[in-house]
Image (cartoon, rainbow, N blue to C red; front, side, top):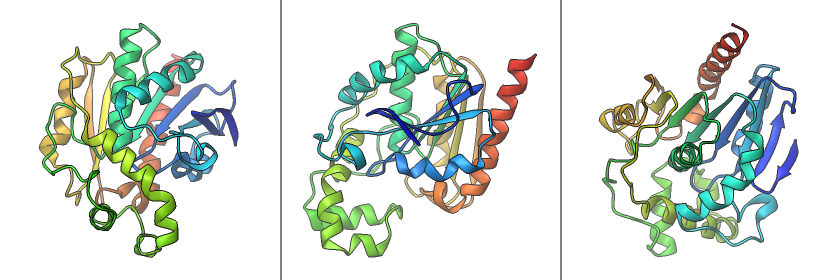
Length: 254
């Protein structure tokens, strides 16, 4: 592991790796969500996880509450690392951040990713079906985030742990729930949309809506599990990611 800057943590590979894989974590999560992926990826793939403030080594930094703040901080950090073919994977909130990041990369005429993997989030032009929860009381908020099944019941019921985690989770949900889509030209990047078959927070129509946001190819893939299939179907997900990395590597050799 190597911290390239506060925003970027490298878990595998190096500057000479053929491909970079950027991963953006879900609400309440951190770069650590992707640490285990390093041992499953091809040797020529450099895994770099995005780390938002207010977690892990950035624990003392103030949490961000608006998408514009995230992109404003992330763009200067990631720009030096767009100098080789790369893929962007984002899960849930991470998919929305990835979309806005790639939009900005396109607008700035920086090198575009070879693939965007939008995981467990509706296409950005769809309005949320659920009411915002980030303004709820702590007790109500904890109950609601428990419905996402991404946090164990043991952690949710541990007052000491939750007092430490709750501010960053709440701020992440504020980013998610105050996001307003602004019409934009389709991305200059193919999109592979992913979701769990039992996800109650995203439906198939909302997932397929990502097709409207690329001027290139669109595909989708469904996994066993719910909103956090990233955990229960990790092996199958990594097989898909490895396939995409191998396909990109083969293309680069032609």
